[in-house]
Length: 262
Image (tube, one colour):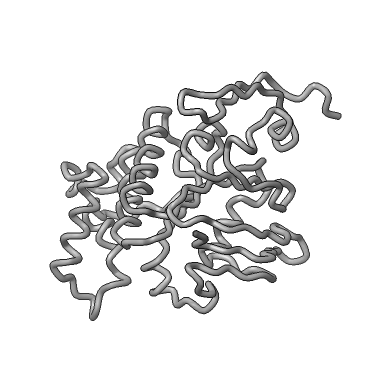
């Protein structure tokens, strides 16, 4: 079942096209990962989907509703976004940060028992109960990322969007965050859209891949369909071998730059 539809999406800065004529559909309850070279338009795509950027043309529908007609407060009940480098709020504790996720639901800025329960549940699910009163600025990178995802979770979204959620994390915390995202996807039937640079992470944790090249959608499909030596060479200009992992997903062994490239 399709949950998000993108039709003829074009984004420009002045006269320069950043995205051109993007068409794709995101499946309900599935994990979708955007890949592509630096500067290809991955983060711009995320910003257009989240209304952070106004497209030059094209439309986006979420669950049948035209994105441009959805009020910001109502959108925050449907979609939660974890940006690439969120600003650390001064002196906010983990509990206070996660509680911000309830703002779209509050009336007269009052916190009710349901809000409190949802916040505590989000903190518990992020395994941050023992850090709930600690300031966000004092957390490690992995803990801080879990706190931001906790905020997103408190919004009770049906669509979770993450722009490079593993950036600046060591390898252990990268897998911790990706396992967490996969768990939320399965437990809450969340539709997920994220940007990743590590192709093996994308292969292991994604149901579908969106490959952006030169500001256009180069391909859309499963990791098994897209991750071939020929396609990876074309997209990233590197030589690789693709071997099946234990779960059947392709595992990429990068051999080096494409020596035949000009």
